[in-house]
Amino acid sequence: MKVFVFHTPESTPTKMVADCAIAVDVLRATSTIATALGSGAEAVQAFSDLDKLLAVSETWAPEKRIRAGERGGSQVEGFDFGNSPLDCTPERVGGRRLFISTTNGTRALQCIEAAPTVLAAALINRRAVVQHLIQHQPETVWIVGSGWEGSFSLEDTVCAGAIVDGLQIELGCSLDDLAGNDETIAAVSLYRQWQDDLLGLFHHASHGKRLLRLNIIEDLKYCSQQDVLDVLPIQRELGVL
Ligand code: 3SL
Image (cartoon, rainbow, N blue to C red; front, top):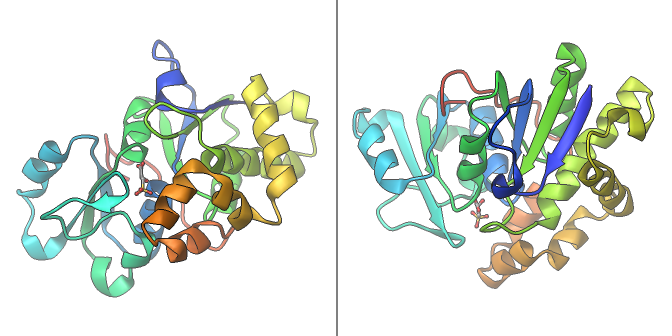
């Protein structure tokens, strides 16, 4: 298995696909997706475009759908949710489909949707993702960070490092055996430096600071936990996990 880390959708190759591609948006889209599925959502359908989300979700009965829209960290007017994983309680999302569009995370998912296997990973469900990779042993794995509007993000990179660190421990191999590019080695180094204080790292991250300015500290705390959800968001049809 060779693992390649790409920091943003923009830096991800467009002319080829990996056997397994993983979108990461720790703050907060993939944390929200994993939480919604863990709370019994029927499925999560991701859109980069808000108008398309509205049009497709319109064909669903109102009591069977939740519309989540986030731009710049805030809830989009007229939507049921913004992008807080803490909104995704069993009472609110159980048995419903979550239609979601966020600034960067849903774009990351869209850029890898052609891969044979597409997963959504966050720190909270890291172990489930590692176990899937160990079980299925894809030859090439891409981990694609969402970043922020084309720029690197600490929180997605540390999550990529956490996944690769978990794989290395399970497989008992060297990092050089696993790493497909230099970004992978850098991500693991970042994780090993911060694994005991991920919330502290989020306070240094530009998007962490953006959310703190919006008073979204509880989401930061929740998203900084590791391996607390045994949920594997896996694409079952285009754009639907
Ligand atoms: O960029 C995204 O996709 C979002 O996850 C950003 S936010 O955390 O909802 O502000």
